Image 1 (cartoon, rainbow, N blue to C red):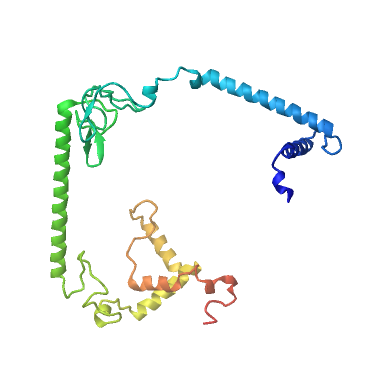
Image 2: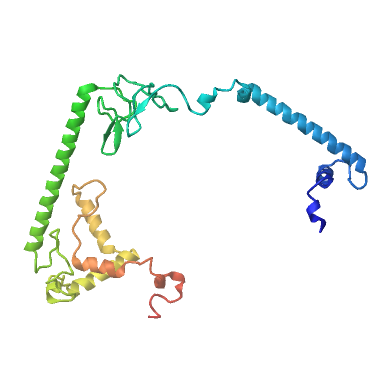
Length: 299
């Protein structure tokens, strides 16, 4: 078909004209390529002239700032092709033996700069993954050069570090030997590495065995009942016996510590058991006042 001809001749210009008119109309310009083609053509012509002027101005400002290398005098043909009349001999590795002067390659970084009284550059010394100065063996960049004294201090620090490592290794070996000795001494018993009794080790008594319950406290039933009676009175707030005892001691005027009304004595096992039996368990949901069970009625 004729599609091959759409990219040739005036078809390309007409397509650009239509695109520019459409973009201008979208931007708010009162122009339409079909309704007023002459205005659209004039606007497109003005746009091309302004674009050309802006391009020339930009190019000129760049050339004024950076210069035009194409206008300079061209180098001789011999230099362009890399040919000179200077005789130079090279070895098999490509190093110049005699002839032309060898020019060292330069980089964008500063070379042969000695700061901080150093006589060697940074990176001339390497030790265990660290770079430094060869003149003082310092691995801190920017540090002041200390010369031979710095090298001696560095060697002394390395020796101290090796000595510390050796001491640590010996301590670990000694600890391992002591642990092995404890394990050997505690074999067949219920004692572990730390010397503490292992409740699950070999030879440990089972729950409820006679050995476990041999030292259980035996409570006197009569004393327990008396302790429960006193605990009930204490909770109700009508402990008349205790009040009488306190009043008698007040009358006697015994010398005691500040704010002390009764003799301090250690509670008996029966009193402790009575306290545990009568104490209120606030965290028990079945014992709450609004639980509606009155304690363990549902159990």
